[in-house]
Image (cartoon, rainbow, N blue to C red; front, side, top):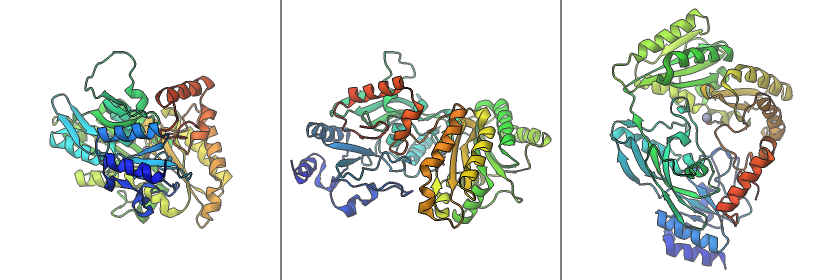
Length: 472
Ligand SMILES: O=C(O)CC[C@@H](O)C(=O)O
Ligand SMILES: [Zn+2]
């Protein structure tokens, strides 16, 4: 059948205005902000309900049409961008943007896949609750994408990954069948926990259309400090003290190098250095409690006081109000985007056991500096989860393309060190297309085989997000 005949049929299902066939209308769906991936598609479909997603999928299945689901298009591994082959239809979930239910008594919220993460935060706040998933992209990423990629972010330390925040899912399968697993139960031991396969499945097994999510008490007291330290060894010791001293009250612990803070001061609007002198490394530490009575500030001061005495910490700025807390987070959340104006950046989203972080950083930084003299490592991120974004900016004034041509070789060096420490080559961003070919280096044959068998059980024709995670 002709491509235009398919478009006509889809228009009957979801309305002609929601079938985008011109290059101009499609443009925002065909590239991502870092400019690493560019794609081509016959059409972008924008269904407005689960029933419409189901109709689209059933038709696509019948006619062997490939489908690439897309949420807020903030993914970092190319999973959401169609390939250049031009035969993958983009299915945008943006119009599925209703909050279906908020239950402050049961601490749950049911939202459709296209709800923007920040909207979820606001909806939870309206009933004095917290939805804790927190990312730099929260103003545009969507919950369906967050779940499909099992997004991490800065609150994993206290609340877990997205996986830990999901109680139930509604999913449209490649065949178009709808699985309504939207349960809000905290306990349900009735056989295989199927939702776990779709969480972090990167849209290869089914399309998440709605989710039942966990809510938490809204913090009544929140304190933060921006801390200057000599090295990651000191940061790890401070983390251990903070975790032991504050337990679940420790809700943020992020590490940043001086060069990253400098990039923010240069490129990020509204950023200012919270500390007067320069420090080789920084930690943003946040403590919060849902209880008005909990002495959060005293605890933060006593942990940092002890750290000063142990000479781990060189200086610290305490946020005096919520605006200052947000100013500190503005720097941390801006850390990713400020690397773009500095030229090519070779990325590694890796994790190692928390206790190995300083040693890993020493080794990996020495290795990349030996490989590309003058390169500028900007390792930052979720030290409390053992997850470092080991990004390496090009040497100043180097040729960007020539530098980026070293991507695979540098990856091999860094990933080799990660594996020496028993770590993971994709801690939170997923596999997508960027890391698909690396999977066989890090998974056993049996693990890969089980993954392939699961894929073909859910998607026997291999039409849904093909070539992502596993090679088709
Ligand atoms: O740019 C990156 O590599 C990291 C993005 C994100 O995961 C973050 O933690 O800011
Ligand atoms: Zn991150």
